[in-house]
Image (cartoon, rainbow, N blue to C red; front, side, top):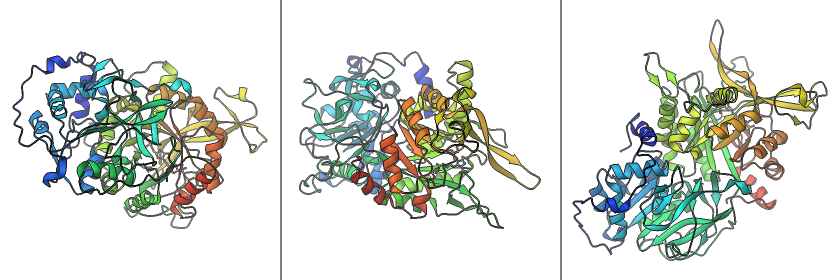
Length: 594
Ligand code: 1PR
């Protein structure tokens, strides 16, 4: 069962993180004093599926999006039993632990619920176990994440933050390759194909843990990508978000005997791939249907007498198509979310739920993430809005307008209040789950000293021969007329460069960099803007707006430090398929997932 909307889980986590127990070192020896009513009902040496049981026990402590793991398990034909008590862990046939959120908060919850000891016992008895992401990290002795904080202590080693000083962007987000170190069975179909990672902390292989390490990944240095001992497995990457190859990892864990012989290694993955993202701008049209639309410089209405909202298809269908076509991620932007409160916009939540049932790459959703008071006076925090998006299937949320206000406040006062939506959501869900979407407009100037904001030299001169421009951030606003309320955009006194640096400090994990001037024009990305921002921050930057040909993708990846490129119009109008973009990038020597 999914957690009910607005369960107290996120607020509990927040409370836990600020409580005095938050950074308390966890002494595993104390755990040993707890006694459980453990009734081993089966032979420990029997592999997971050999008894034909189709039930998987899932340890979900309520800190984030476990929906995608649930969907992947169900997609593979298994039923889920949720852990309610430590005994459920001890009596499981096979246990999946998709850790989400922060290390310390997770350990606090496991300790408080008495589950840490049960997990140790289960694993030490060599019962079928699969830890995912934080579910791998928690097996180690300790983590430096808001710590040091002790973990379960089953594997020697300390979980540490990636070092961004050597130019590697943190979080490590995207599709990377594995170096298989020993036979791990569940990785038998991976070979040289990419799998999806999203994390800021990692464990390092050493002599002490080498009998556990089954694969490593290189990102700045070699880190542990998976461990395996007997029936106990854990992976740092997300199999539930790694497309077909990830589903095969889960399948091999769930059905170890039925997956046939080892396949030859295929694929050419060597390093972190550049991502190609399909974006779906979604809104309700005048007939009340939720449609995928697409603007020209953010104008999404047809220039006809009827002035209808441009309709380019159905969101769930198109997202499913892009997944099959090889999109590395799918992004939904609920472009009227700021005025139609997203939690009142149930169709959008349904879109996420349905999409996540069949799309096994990361899903991002944006639009309307802010505090809101409804007509009945009920107040919803932006954290509640984001939580509902996560519960409905989003892996990342994207904040637009509210992040602009937060950055303005931060730059004006120099104080991080911790109260902005950006800070609150990244505190609970981790900064890798929070994208900031920037919607700037070019403002030409004669000389950089003419403005207080960072300028770039433009390739096409401004209307009065200007050689420079700054990029003014905009926010969604309501425009009232006698006949209707419509959306518009208001320029704010902050540049895209200043905003990007501020939101990185406030906890953004990634920047989705649009450009209103280029949107829908098909003339290529704004290289000067993207270079300036991707050089200024150490979090990944997604280049957006203006793609009109496969060559525009290679241009943005060779001339800037963008980690991903996003497009909408060319994919919706079927002008350039995602496959052609990838083939072109491969031909140009740019690493992509195929
Ligand atoms: O401000 O937090 O409610 O978020 C609103 C979100 O909706 C923001 O992420 C903002 O970018 C988006 N949005 C608002 N109005 C529009 C509009 O089009 N009228 N869509 C809009 C922005 C921009 C891109 C687009 C690329 C690629 N869409 O994401 O998909 O420019 O297009 P192209 O390849 O066709 O050039 P909040």
